[in-house]
Image 1 (cartoon, helix red, strand yellow):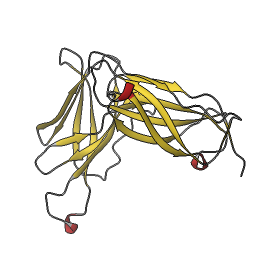
Image 2 (image 1 turned 90 degrees about the vertical axis):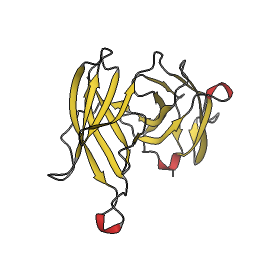
Image 3 (image 1 turned 60 degrees about the horizontal axis):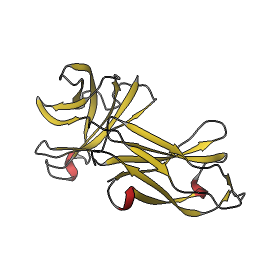
Length: 209
């Protein structure tokens, strides 16, 4: 079972603007907020609106109450176990529904269009490129991860993208000097909040210091 990652902003009117959710293999864990802190309830739903799982995620003020007015925004963040049959996500806070989203019919696709230098040695800053698409033309959450020879990796880019534009082409500037030693490839992954797709770059080696 995958774990759904939820993160966003909640304003004083109760309007929640979530980043596009994505999944991870990291198991869910208890809320990390202080004891007695506020929380929102997450409901993972199937297509018939039946609740498959419930979880609590933290709702925390982004500023100390003494630093600003009462309507300062709150941060919503947490993890929830996501059954395979999940087709909808609903958040409740203080008895009200503050967010609801349903899976689009289609699934995203992504292709890495970047190639390493001819000698296979990567050095300094460079433009990493891709092409992403979705049959329902919905926004996507895009990640770029490093892949190392020991199987480990880390996120080096995270952004919200719209598949439209010239054939869904996109780019981001990365700096190989920030990559962990042993990095041999880059993995690009996109999510529409429910479905995901990924692709891996050609292999390379990092320039020696």
